[in-house]
Image (cartoon, rainbow, N blue to C red):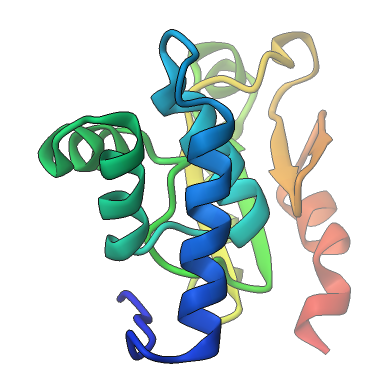
Length: 157
């Protein structure tokens, strides 16, 4: 679900100016699109349709080109992020040491909540300490279902 604001709102104008500024900072860089998209998500949290149009305009790309990149990579959110995120590694090394069970427990305990996103990723680069997860942007290893629920315990209250 995209939360677009009215084109005439002050928030929308500030958002548009921010996206344009970010794009213009890298407009002459080779391969600027990914840098600009990462910068926009870092600053604004997610990308709206108007952001894609602005970036395409500044970088002299088609809206379809920018949209294609945004829709391909999961990190380029098109909706605001929930308050909490759990990204569990489902790579082979983590699977071999119990990631499936941790993922199932996380989904059962947390996925029904509107303020929590439980998602899978396919490697966090923490293979020696699997099962691994990013919990609110912080990497954790050697997880069990109980340990993960302990990390998220305060969210449930």
